[in-house]
Each structure stands twice: as C-alpha cells, then as structure tokens.
Length: 166
Image 1 (cartoon, rainbow, N blue to C red):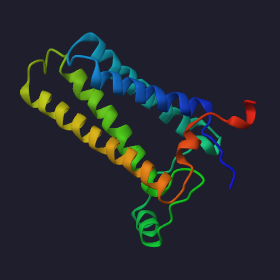
Image 2 (cartoon, one colour; image 1 turned 90 degrees about the vertical axis):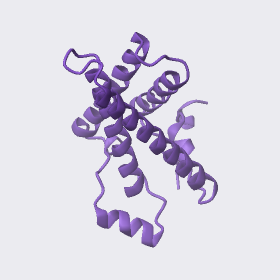
Image 3 (cartoon, one colour; image 1 turned 30 degrees about the horizontal axis):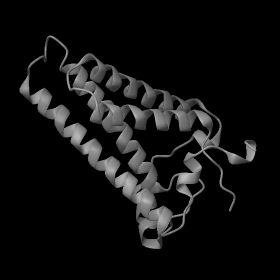
Image 4 (tube, rainbow, N blue to C red; image 1 turned 120 degrees about the vertical axis):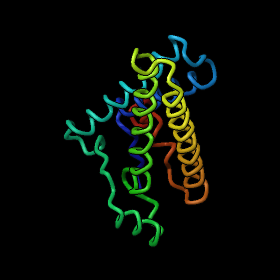
C-alpha cells in the first residue's frame, strides 16, 4: 500500500497545534498574555481545520464523525488500517478539537468582567485542559502502538511527501 502523506495545510495545522500546546504547557505561565494568545491561536487553527473539513472537496481533508456501529465494527473486527482516519481515530480527533475549543472558551470567560475571578470557571478550565491532555496521551499511545505492533505507517503520513523531494 502506497503511503499518502497528509496535505501540507493539514500537516502545518497539526504540527502548529502540537508546537503551541507544548509551548503553552511547558514554557508559558497561566494567565499571562502569551498563554492567552497561544490558546486563542490554537482555537483559530482548529476552526481553520474545521473550515477545510466543511468546505474542501478534497477527500484528504474530510473527516467523518463515526457512528457507534462503525466504532463497534472496528473494535470487533480489529480493523486498524484505513486510508484516512479510522472511526476510533476520527472520534479521537473530534474529541480533541472539541476540548481545545472548550479550553479556549473557558479561558476567555476568565478574562471577562462577568466571570473574572469566578472559581467555578477556573475549575472548569482546569478540568477541560486535564481532559485534553489525557486524550492527547491516549492519542499518542495509540499511534505508537499501531505503528509498532500493527505496522501501520501513521507517522509517515504526518511527515513530508518524500516522492516530491529528491
């Protein structure tokens, strides 16, 4: 099976999200302006990616919200290799995007006059962020396991297209 890498805009969005989230987690102080702008930038990138999902005619940009039946079928039949995201992979991506948008929204609420200093908003933001980190760790674990145990070329799909670079 030929390895088709993701289109360049998708790779740029993906790796920009990784870089922003890593920087935000490891280097930026919560509440500081850089932390806020990193969060808003991540939300913007997720919205851009959803725009590609909705408006692009290219099937490589598409991602379908899976049905419960599709997820059950993937698990029961152990169908791991897919041309694009598997049902479980698509569910993970939609979940991560949703949590990124929720984190940006709850973070923004903390800056408004109506909710500034409200403990429940800070707690909500923390719960969302920790849930996001948990899903990302599961996402990375699944990629490593599928790459090593099932020999799916997932990491190669996220890299550059070597056929055009000699």
